[in-house]
Amino acid sequence: QVQMVESGGGLVQTGGSLRLSCVSSGTIASIAHMGWYRQAPGKQRELVAVITSGGSTNYGDSMKGRFTISGDIAAITVYLQMSSLKPEDTAVYYCNVVSSSGRYRRDYWGQGTQVTVSS
Image (cartoon, rainbow, N blue to C red; front, side, top):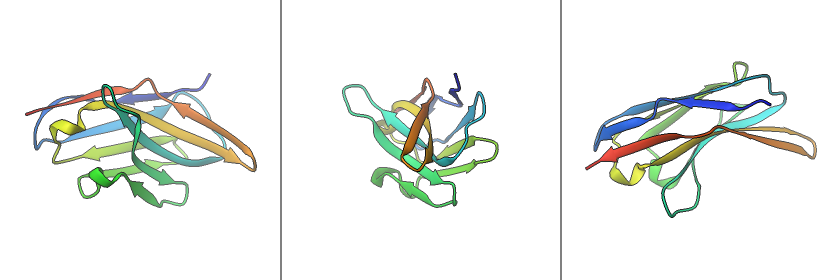
């Protein structure tokens, strides 16, 4: 079964930077968009950033201006450059790829990578 594999998480001080990477373990057809979500303890999973197959991007409000998403649809690889990190960015970050064609949709998720920002 195809899964997304994340890497790049870790511990960083406030104001620091991290770069997350995500690559697919196999082939995924009809990719509509790729993105990152995060979930902090006791909170719901929230959108961090998404990039579409056409290259358009969208960010969660608190990430705008600090995070940058990039990716390669053909290589099924997506990156998240995070800068000016804050303690409230501490969470498990999940990679997501959506395959969509007509009424068919399938989401592929990774296991998550922990990002911890110390104050």
